[in-house]
Length: 302
Image (cartoon, rainbow, N blue to C red; front, side, top):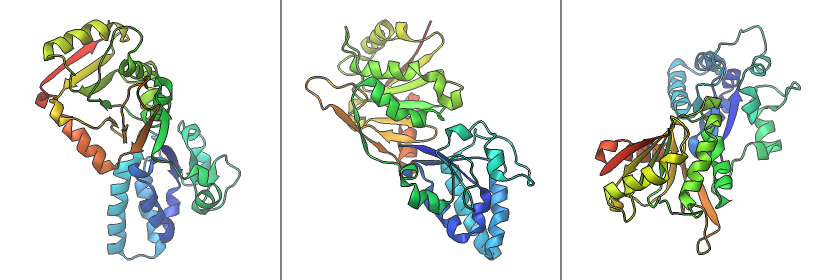
């Protein structure tokens, strides 16, 4: 559902290709852009001068480009400037993010570097590397659900789960908790393999009174947390919650029927759809202030 690309800033020397950048990279389209080199925006601004645009139009284009990069730039990718003497693609190949890229997009045809394409080669001849399907339908077991979420989680450092009906049951039928445990078990893969130490879960607490829900989570969930890992619960009024989301600092996914594994009487697949940046921000802001929840507490693994 989400893919990471790198674009040679020299591509911006073509007004047609520059417009393709503006159109192609959006959270809603599942395409992210790694910052390589660190001064990518400055290099793009210089390249844009070669289009022959007047100063005012270039300023407008740069404003539009800034909006795009604010939304899709992966800023913890390559954190160094490239020298002007060596080819961009050869320097990109040496960065720690290169192996994670779906493709590197250059102005001219490929030179033999793995996964290097022009826009035309990528969009027309290698469509499977360009189109990122949404919605997708995923089997409702914890491993498959998290497999589908992981491309986004790998470069996310803040993870927020919105699951109104989150609950824990005795025995082996912990359909919500199994998915949370699977996410936590892969925590070292997230945030550019730097790992995370906290997840926020928003729910309505079910039929439990506030104190009862807290006590149940302390009893049933806290013992399974890794040492020092924080699982924060924010309990909201039931009327305020309906949809299920995974929200991160980089993107968002609507999880239709929810995070829980299927049971005998439930659908076997969950429909997952990407959120636009605007929708992600709205949901993020709605659940951001824990002081507005009717209850919140933090479990810390011991």
